[in-house]
Length: 334
Image (cartoon, rainbow, N blue to C red; front, top):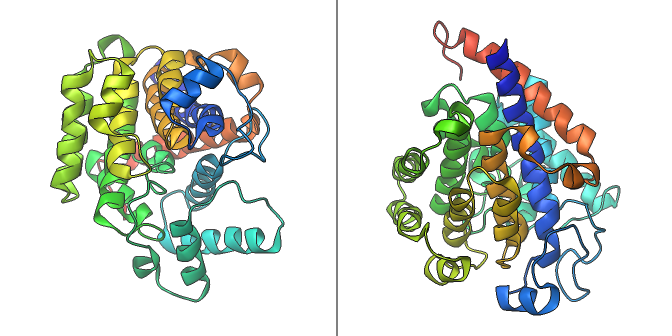
């Protein structure tokens, strides 16, 4: 029973952690670390983005499309009890239609995702609808896959890659989703008191190679030598652009430099700038998965948009994952 309660906390911590990171990071997206320092000093609370930056229409504590797309994937998995790509593709089309009709606001959806959703709406199969871009749209939303299949690292990798394809079919996007999902699953399976950098990082490198992306493996592997370096030095080495080859390694750096401190993990990502909402989203997901819901400061949870819905999805994913884990030795899922 205690083990299940811990897993439930980790599932909720992962979902809430990514949303908090996203909502914290949305205010500094598109800024440089130097601009953030000059304007804010150090960002440690929710805030509005400058008028000339992405997300300027959002209020403090609101999340971007990173969390919105994560919840869309989570709701599809919850509905079908597993990742079912045909169902998820239909959910993407319905979501896209609502965007076009103005029934929901556009919270910064990337062009790769929009083009792919349009292709799906015109009956392009999900295996061919995804674009070849280098952005992180599938990596930022992959957490529900990691939670659902946490007990089977092979399934985590294969399902993460498949979940990427409807919108992001490029090698780097698929490998990024694989790396992030594997890191989250490893964190779920690890006790925080026995946390080991090598286990997370070796798994991340292995996942990139599993996806066939040697360059992603190289970029992720660079994190190992930077854990004693200050963030500005890490930014110079790893990069801080909107490329997934920068975002995923830097998110891992933010987590691995502060694995037991959710506050500092997210603050490090937010104050780096660049694609800060996605970086903080990924770092927050891994840190929440390791330490559980209790590690997230109440001040951030209390002011987070849609917190009850997000936590409920975490609880539902937990229930489905536990059921899947019980069946796993006797029946493989597809």
